[in-house]
Image (cartoon, rainbow, N blue to C red; front, side):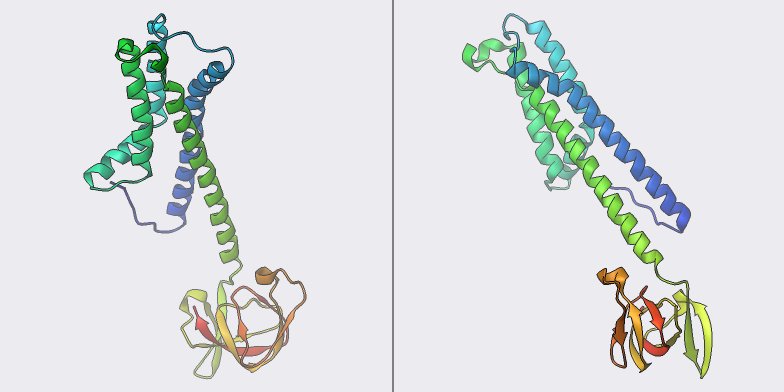
Length: 247
């Protein structure tokens, strides 16, 4: 029931980010619409009270229609997801939301149309509950998407610390090659002031490495033969050879 496409380059990545931003805004809009319908009903119910059901059937039918709009506009994707899960012989969060809000609205509408089915003391409707649940879950999903987006941005910034080229030793010759061409167990040289291209282990020489991007500690760390070095850290002084252990 889900759609997918292969991402091929930065243009697709930009389109994906734009679509995620549109989806984030749609979630906020859906939460706002459902909240505008549900929260006034809740506040009125606990403060001034709502008109009796039996004497104000038309009023409650209008409220039912408004809450149905909230379920369709703001919560339609939950019902669609629950329906797809049903045909896949599965149940998920959409199933729970659809059952809860759908049952609340359906029960309330039946009581509104046929109040004589239950005693007067039991003539309660739950239109506001259905709308508020939809509003809160949409708002929570929007917050989750925003937090996930910030995490992705942090990861991208971290990846951006990796250099674009590396100096490798092949057949006794040193050469600068794109980072994508570095092989496992290949020998690389790092000179003073350069970023370390890939994770590895020092095999010759020693130096002090600025690892603040990993640990937050500003003081350089002394590294010598047999010590591991990490991608994106900075060689402060000295030069050394290391073997690529993770590429």
